[in-house]
Length: 411
Image (cartoon, rainbow, N blue to C red):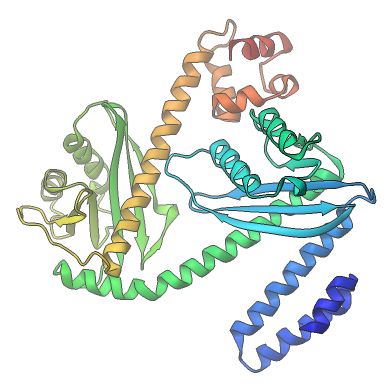
């Protein structure tokens, strides 16, 4: 290990990589796969570090942090490349927790403020390079400038070496995030078989629930009512089988909404699950079960999960089933229910955003339904249209420079 540290400090990456490759092969030959995987991860980290060194400018005065965040539906990862005197001296990575309903800009600003709140004033960079444009960039720059005692510049590059570094940081963050997700899946899989077996027993099922579908309703005081259905097979989410539903009428009636969604999903009687979970208590599960009886599918096990006490309700039963609070089966069902809720809320939010955007665009003279659809399909949200440059708007079919300027004025 001491030899490896010396080679790293000398910048002798090729010899260090060769040593690590030999180490990985030795562990693999000895069937020490965990040690081999660790050696492989060190090789990948070395390759990223070496690649970053090659991208860094020859400017010996360069004092810069590259700050990048990547995320997916469930995870987010922060990567920071620190360059001082033109040399990459450190890489920081951090797994970020996602708050329900938090959008990308909120996540980014929060992570940026939290990270630099813990950095000593004297260690702040002269330049901060971001992978996202922020409305608060100047405010954050002023805050860091005041702390450092000299100007701190914040940019989001569009080309050149700095953009190459941003892309590299993003790629490295995604590798770390994917590794974390794999570790989480491996850990979760240890409990999945136990959870499925226990659910079979607790719910008095004939077989283990190999395919589970879960429904959730989302609305705001009866408007923009939507529903979600998520699907788990052998304990793993099957996202290609997820479904979203726009309800036929807006109504502040979760029972009727749940009945409509269940009927729409199962009327074809195709690809049926072993277990159906309804996000709700006695009322919701009994309403859904009425539809299953109507469709002659009431042999499929159905259960309602009430949020307040995390109790399970079977159709027609007044007393709930209480699971151990620390049991793997409760954690597993909560995970499914939370995924259905997230999926429904994100659809509801997108629908509200598109309606709000349509309302704003309706006021633009000369912007008819077809051109509004072009804008919606291209950008999706009001925020993204605001960020779009004039030439990006003009590049869209049917939108000339004069109309593009009207759009920018309206929003």
